[in-house]
Length: 112
Image (cartoon, rainbow, N blue to C red; front, side, top):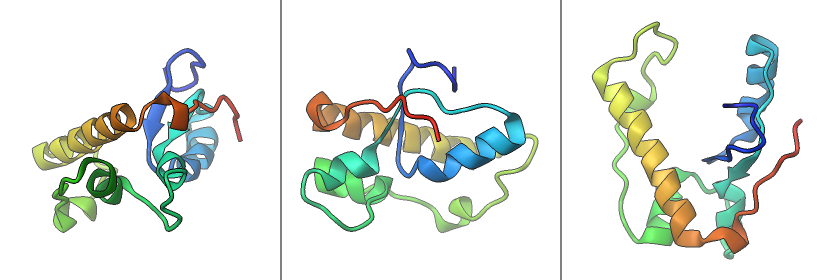
């Protein structure tokens, strides 16, 4: 799924994930849309993450727990609050993607 060019992965700041995926797992990120770039195309030139994008595009506040953000994500089994955090991030990215629309979010099949 991660390498598939048919399944478009969406998220924020995907570039730093490419190296570890290749180095640690031997896989390459297939087609993807970095929503940080898409939001910048709307006229916001500073760094934009999921929390900022939700505020900019949706006019909503995304709560992100600092303790969960900085918790140990390398655990073999994630805690329920980590799973909820990850699910909220994924859902927020999908919601921003749909709100922006496809003209601003052309998938990249470029692999680095």
